[in-house]
Length: 417
Image (tube, helix red, strand yellow):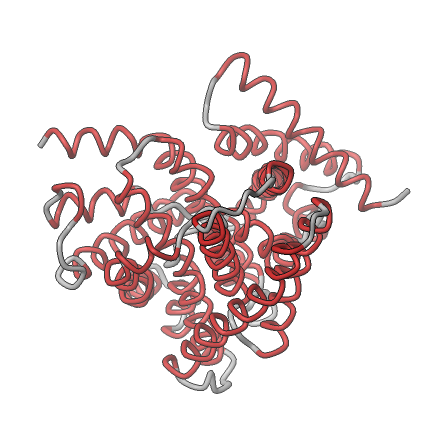
């Protein structure tokens, strides 16, 4: 039997079932319902497999890896999801809020990673965990960036003010590149390899991504601009995104940021053509990318939910999960509060404390953090890896489900004060 088709059928079947039940009964945000309800399904599957194989759940978890989330996301669908989320943004919005977005995406991500690393290092010393300082800093780089997919698919549905919502979305679309640069540096320290220095890596990752994304989009847009074939427009956009990501991978730049650049440049060029009076018939184009975004989001959240059972491999799971979530909250709030002194005027009438609290609670984590955590498997001892992966899963679950469901209530409470 074809494993790919089997896993695709299982994933889509679960997504359809959960989505239908949620629509009729629970009325939760779609992505949150997929993650929340696929977790018990994953636990049940693990128990059934353990019974069939006549082994313990722990042994089954150690030997079976049904979904390769790292390759599915980082080396597969991430580029298309980021383009789908960013192709509706305008370069003018980034230009007007460049200072705020830059501080949030670069400064706060760096500071947050360092704070988290230091906090968890203290915890590791207190509880005799097998974590060195470089491993803890690498852990911080995994948890610091907010997830662009979670932000664009969940936060935009809560009706936050335009500027506040844009800053959350803009930060999440850019800070993954900073997180990857930090991860390269700190993982190089863990494996005793030179990462080339943070600023050198960041310049290569980000500047190279901007150049590649802009050039490829400018060239491919000429085909979209002059062709009359609607299907060719879609194929050209798919080529532009995939080509951009492949070039960035080959040149060691941030493919994620490059795909965001593709989306923003495309949206800007499209808007410029419309202002000149060009009549576009892009309903099929927009419909395709919206459908692709929904499909890939559905698959990602189901896979994350089914993979959540791997948290059972972690020793002292409840205590360490709680400590990981608390460290994440403290690191995020501390970095944001420090950032409020640099971003200039705080939007929508918030004070520094209120702004920091809202963006801390709105800082959702997702598949990107899990994929980075999974990529450390060859760098760490099994007990260290299991703790790191379990803690990341706990953070993703808490931020996506608990914070994702209550961010609107937190916003309303802050506005009343």
